[in-house]
Image (cartoon, rainbow over all chains, first blue to last red; front, side):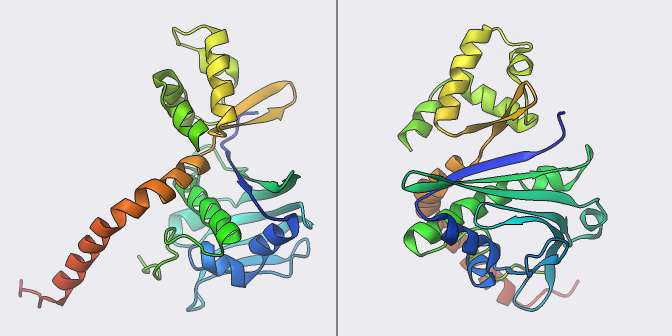
Length: 155
Length: 107
């Protein structure tokens, strides 16, 4: 098995419950996730949407696994241009593992087709999001990167 | 963070990261292909990269796959690069705003 997949890992000095809240609540994601608010009831099979402040949907998916506060998975479809929106949805898995004073957050984004356009696009995006999330939980301030500073243009 | 800088200080380790940037999820055998380095040397470099968390491994059956983890590099960039580059970037964005205010020349 050698399908295209990205694996990200960061260690965050926080509790699994707080990290869980940060990845599932709009008031948190808005601060570190390209200013998008996540919207879902987190029931398996329910929709997951990431909304900009003006109501536009940036990405969407369906909840696959929800096992608080350790494992969350949903499908992922980018909507910002027609070519990527037409791709088969990929899958994101979040694993939160307590390790002493901190927690390991592992994000696996996989299940891409071999010719996926999204796959090469997202590498830096997730790294920025993970670094910003870590900063938010450890210092109370998200980083002024990853489009958090100003609204993203429609282009 | 010191572990990350130390891991990056070696050319062979940077090459392994570049290799994984090109094709992620390679096994040790695949990473050794076409390399002048011995399997033991590659394996040792991978351990240093893993310990700096620049490489993350995932087992799939009996195969260990190696993935480039860019998060530590992002953290260095956020801490040590963005901070010093911000002034320059804000100058560029101020220039952009000033140019936007200029009335467009009729074409």
